[in-house]
Length: 578
Image (cartoon, rainbow, N blue to C red; front, side, top):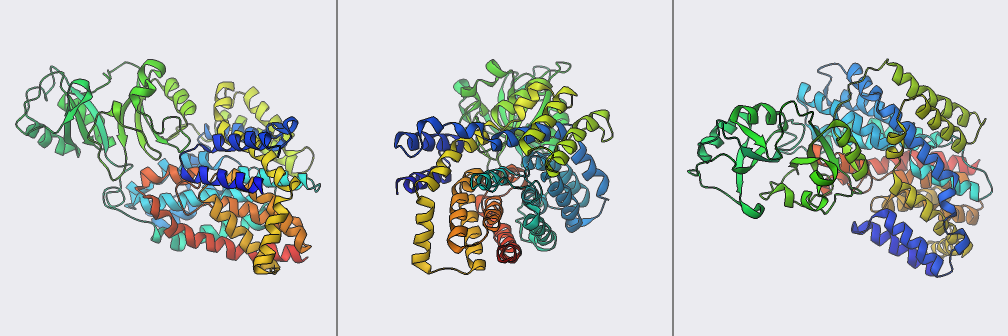
């Protein structure tokens, strides 16, 4: 089966992390066309599919709501001081799950992280106890509606391809809502206790790990003429220390304590983010990229995603200053301290970057390079802009849910209205669209349909029956979900949904059962990426601020996947038996 071999190659490529999901999907499509598995005339039909329009429109509406600060404002108002970790997860997780049903779950999480970190500082809670459960809660919320997550849109498109029409807007709530509620209860009662709490982030309850920052000695500053030992003692008041001196060619060396510092010397320091301003100013140390008062420059934090254009590169190769007008002045990579020039440091997923530049320049740079801002929003909840963003979203959802207009049409119209009303600028709207996700959607749809036209999906079902016999409905649904979960933990969840949807349809037909429960099982499985940081962008987003390691996620995620299976299987079995 050529198509199965091709899909196996896609899975391996995505799981390796060496190939971007969009490039792997596009490569698979082109190979399928070259092998005659997909007609050349249909090669790019997926890019015009309703699913692609639905996801793009939902992302634009998500950006409009995101910029109002509504989600973060609710979190700040509804969580009283001294609530404790359990209540924090119930409130923040509940808000995140509800928001993720209607806006992009990555955006919902990025808005809640600053609120969660403030709660950690205020109530003495370890960030590691909150951030992973919060990530999982926002993923769970996406299971409940058509636009909650791209896998749901793909599964709906698969249903339409089976001549049954697309799913209704809230069809996913039948099983998705009970799973989300049960998952949130587990996270609040048990999950946060299983999350790791390491010394250095969790125990100290700081926003992020210490930054490695590059500074220079001002001629008239206090540091000019100090020895390295003296500077270290002075930095101790700001939780900082000297790591290295930077010489010609960006070469670094660990200096002797008696080394006298002179004006213009460049140093690498380790320091906490909140100490950067007062500490550097008091000691007469300037950020190496020559920040000056009144320059109009601001400093912002951003997390590097797995799809970011910066992964594997360094500041020098990206030419941040020359091309973007942005300075990389600090980098936090939890658990490690890098003793080399920031210009040469290779950027990795999960890094938290401290960037400096003009506000509008930083926003454009973050959007273009796939960075997620880690900063609080300050807009008022009851502002006119909030209404201009929320009302089009509510109207679009209402039209789609009532069946008055198809979801792609209703949401595209709502997005256009949001832009026309000024809730989001046209530039920001285009920047909000996650183009790699759309490429995965458009490329994988023809490949997935080839599984049906070539008989590959039916062959997988027959092989299953020959191996284990004809399974009972609960077993078939549980195995389908478990297999989809496993794939989603190591590859893109949209690609997982595209690959598994034809198998789900074939399995349902072979058992003589309704197709809908099997497609819903696929949707839940594709969204249950809880075992690894690469399974979902949200997991990667909290990796740095929470101080997590790759192998931490299964401790909280494996029981959560079991909860999802235990809750969804009887519900879907009842649907299939009706």
